[in-house]
Amino acid sequence: MVTRRSLLVAAAALPFAGCERQPELRIGYQTNGLLLAAKGRGSVEAALVGRATVTWRDFPSGPPLLEAMSLGDIDLGGAGDTPPIAAQAAGARVVYVAAQPVSGSAAAIIVPKGSSRRTAADLKGAKLAYTRASSAELFVRAALATAGLDTADIAPVNLTPTQAATAFAAGAVDAWAIWDPFLAHAEVELGARAIVGGLGLARSTSFILANAGTVTAHPDLVVAALDTLAATADWAAAHRDALGPLIARVGSLSPAVAARIAARQDLGLIRLNPTIIAAQQGIADALHADGQLPAVNVARAMWPGWH
Image (cartoon, rainbow, N blue to C red; front, side, top):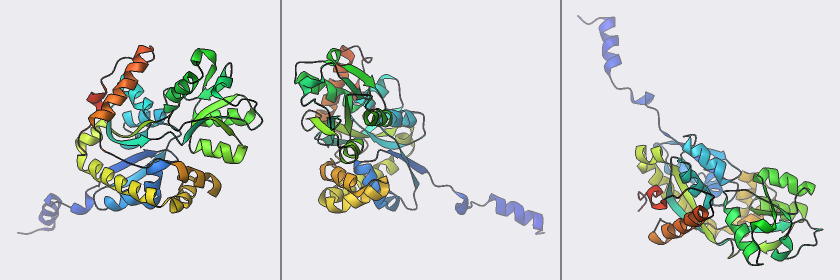
């Protein structure tokens, strides 16, 4: 006999596709560059529709972004060359998944508009703000070396970009090594002047990184996201006039600040290769030789899934 109870039991045993929850891809970004453009265009969401939900979280710099990634709070994100090395040395569960060549044009060492400092040599004895374990640290070293100086010749002030912005505006530091969007804001809104441009000196590689568990559980989503980011990079590089307004809208920045960022932003995305790995290992070895970080094998944190 078919009873109401037997029907309910049978129904409970059937798969109910409508209740299956899509995986979530959580992306960490900074207010510049490729990931910001992708967020503004909704390109990753469009590529993963029906496969995953996409959420975004902004960070002021690479170190806190990678800390959140290691803790499993985000799945994918971007950082400069030094933060991933520091993260790997600390045992973070993050892996490199793609590379972004950086010219250095979006970084500089700046001074207040009334400062008498004009060159790298003038940084001797200066209170120079920058974020330790970020790409700015290596840039500072390279800039000082051009004048025969090193970090012993300055008064380094380790501040997050947000903290440094406040200190710089208040005149609490003499100079600041920083990147966009903070650089563009200081130039446009505060009249800051660059005494050492990053072009060439800050040439390096930034990276897209992922949580190690994410690439194991959802490699297809990571690959699809990277394919989409590469296409977005091509669009952004060819449409910088449209990129400026997009950055202004998504980053809540003034049109003048956003236009400056768009004009000099590095936007390419390429696959990992032996040359990039070797260069990153060279940075890791230098940091270890200086006693700043334990030795790491960069290649062990490289994910070969995007090929």
